[in-house]
Structure formats: structure tokens, C-alpha cells
Length: 268
Ligand code: HPA
Image (cartoon, rainbow, N blue to C red):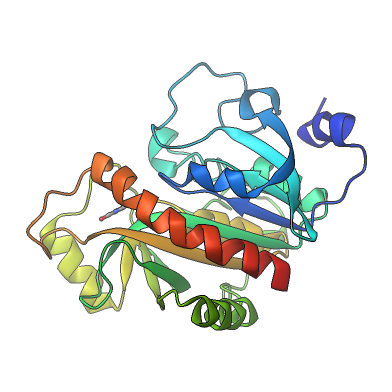
């Protein structure tokens, strides 16, 4: 049975309006959902970890949740598989195809990222308005049809960004925008790499999101993506960057996401 059938077996033909992917340390955002039905990824064919034992990244969930957020039907992917885990940039493809097939026309992506912008400090949110694919890998390699030639202009939907800016202003949440540098990880960047990123025009750096945006644009979904800034890029502050720090500071960002996202979902 494919993942769509597994989900529909329990939720009937309920349409999903919006899908949301939760980044590192942001699993608590799943509390925003009401009338939840949970599907562990390992029961959904083609999802991360299906038919494969263990090896999850700490701080990342591994369930698909469906339910209600205000007036919308929402599917939450509580965690993602990253390129750095198994070298598969298309690891989230089936999960995204599934939520799109269930009706989702909009994809909201969250992540944790390092800031390359002196003015945007840890604990704040930064929307993505573009990305630089510095991992050099593309999730559509191997896609045999002309669908693979995806236009990436305005990939980060300008209407959704404007909507989010207006909502953030009303909620008094500082919200910056910038270009996200996708690095493969899992090691953090060197100081020289961060300096290069700044010169290339990047404002944040992280190990996820860009491949999902590419897939979602191929699927015709409107994309909004936002980082919780957990640290300054390597060498920019007197601190040691670690995954523990990412998870700790992400909880501060989560409180802001918890206000911003339901209001955005309502307004879409
Ligand atoms: N680099 C890459 N990924 C990250 C960082 C970082 O500084 N912080 C959180 N995720």
C-alpha cells in the first residue's frame, strides 16, 4: 500500500490545505495541531526510514501528523531526512509528493540556521527569500522527465513573504529576510567558508530546506520557508557551535514560530 492509501485509510478523503515541515529542535510546534492523527514515517512507504532500522537525528521528529490548525487542514512532517544522513538529496520527495497529492498547495518549511548577518542574532527568525545551492547536489538528478527543469525564480513565494511580514509586524515579532546558503554538513562550516558565504551574498547557512524547495517547486506548490537562527556563523561570535546549542536556542525560536505560523496558516 502506498503512503497516500495508508493515510486515506484512516482519515478518509479529507483534503490537506497546507503542509508544514519542522526543523531541528522545533518538534514542539506539533502542539499547534488539533484533532491529530499520527503516522510514523516507518509505516509510510517511501518516507524517511521506511523499512530501514534506526539512525534518526536527535531533535528531529519522524511522524506525519494530520489535523486542524484554525480553519485549515494541515499535515505536519515533524522531521526531515537530510542529505548528510545518507547522501540522498531527494529523501523527502515521496513525503512531499504525498502531501501534495492529498491536496496541499502550500508548503511551509522551518529550519535552524546560522546567521551570517551581524544584525540578526540567535533567537530570531529569518525568512528565506532565495537560496544558494552550495551543497552542489540536486534532488532532481535522476528525474527522467522534463519536469526536472524547474524555474527557481520567485521560488520563495513573494506573496507569502509579504503576508508573513504583515503578520509578524502585528504580533511584534522581528522578522528579517535573506539568502540561505545550503551547505551539505554534517560538519559545521569553517571560518573561511562562512567568510566566503558572506561575500557570495548569503545571510544564513544551514544543512536542509533547499532540496525540499526544489522538489516542491517541481510539484507546483507555493513555498514559504523560515529559519530559527540558533547561532552566528562559524567564527563570527565567541562561541562553539554545536548540535546541542542548535536544539537549545531552537526552543526560543519555537515560541516565535508558535505565534507566527498559526496566524499565517489562518491568513493563507
Ligand atoms: N551551519 C549549518 N547549519 C546550521 C547552523 C550553522 O551554523 N546552525 C544551525 N544549523
